[in-house]
Amino acid sequence: MSSNRRNFLKKAVASATGVSIAGSVLASSAKSYSKIIGANDRLNIAIIGLGRRLGAYYDPISRKESNVELLYLCDVMKSQREKAAANFTKIIKNKPVLENDIRKVLEDTKVDAIFNATPDHWHTPGACMAMEAGKHVYLEKPCSHNPKEGEIVVAFQQKYNKVVQMGNQQRSSPESQEIIKDIHNGVIGNAYKAVAFYTNSRGEVPIPKKQAPPEGLDWDLFQGPAPRKEYEHDTWDYNWHWYGWDYGTAEMGNNATHELDVARWALDVVYPMHVDVNGGKFHYVNDGWSMYDTMEASFHFANNRLIQWQGQSRNAYDTFGADRGTIIYGSEGSVFVNRGGYRLYDLKGKLVKEKKGAGDEGGINLGGGGGMTTMHAMNFFETIRGKEKLTSPIEQGVVSQLLTHYANISSRIGKGFDVDEKNGRIYDREAMKLWSRDYEPGWEPKI
Image 1 (cartoon, one colour):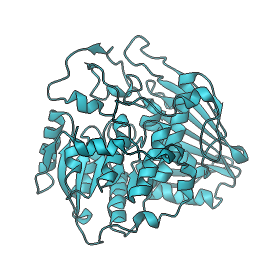
Image 2: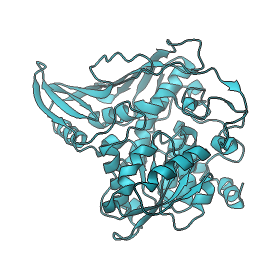
Image 3: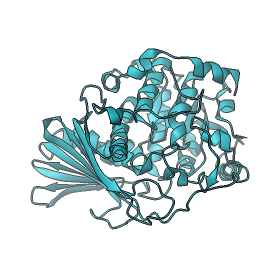
């Protein structure tokens, strides 16, 4: 570990654990973007993590109007670096440097911004390291592995004054922006409930067995902030999502993040008063999947507003006629909205208005690339240049992400709990024991 990294990890300010996300939500964004680079400057960028999200970045990075240059492709797996390089060779002129260690990328002062598409346990630590190194960050979901990391990443953004866009790309959808604005203006009257859902047909996964790491994998660096343990088959290639809590955040962090963000956005709510869940593992019960694969969650807010989540990871029956989306109920009508557009209905269930998106953003396809990610990334670039404001600033993203953490915590302790509406903290002591997580000594992000 480099001396710079050691010095970074030794810094600590006691107030970091008491950062109120609510205060961040209400803070003016003007200060956040006051020291950004000139509007005509080309941005030098790096991608950290070259897995299933990579395909979504080809278009925004290769577009001439983006005016960016890809300097680094970074991943702990050699084969992924080589595959990414081969793909980018077809669409960009320069040849990015291939690197396996994020720390070496961040040492390069020419890098202006990074895309952090690493596994979940690396998201906040990697983003914080980047901000301290002077980089702007496009931070994929989940923006935090646990609630405390949400507080920490906001604190870092405020301290280092960097542009941090969360990768919940539906916030950049013109159709979603339009209908949410209409909902806020009363198109369906009083919006009182949102039902967010996701279905998939994920299959059986291997039972993890200890073995040597695959050829080309830097297993120590893959673990990074997580406590060290021996490699188990087939952890590194996506199944880390389901093999315990060291690396993943289950389907709530993996996918519910998107729809719950839309639900919270539509109802214009912040922290709930009460959370409870009902879920379990019901499919392929003897395989290696160690988390729930089915989840129902309820988030009760003030003014009698409610968000409900229905998630089916391994049963693809489309309860609501689509594989994912959000339904918003109002006193005078309802709205169905997803990545493909929206449909507005009156109280009798008659279709009043429909608008389809022009992009090709995927539903449950791995990577989810397409038009919205392009718009989201370009909004990130233009915000760095001072021409736009973020559609999903990190101080908003962490609040939506907190809903997924609440559900995971409730599932793990087997009961619901009340929440402080002012700061998002959980009243239940058992639940608060899961507010953070264990780290490899010396790797916990602190400010």
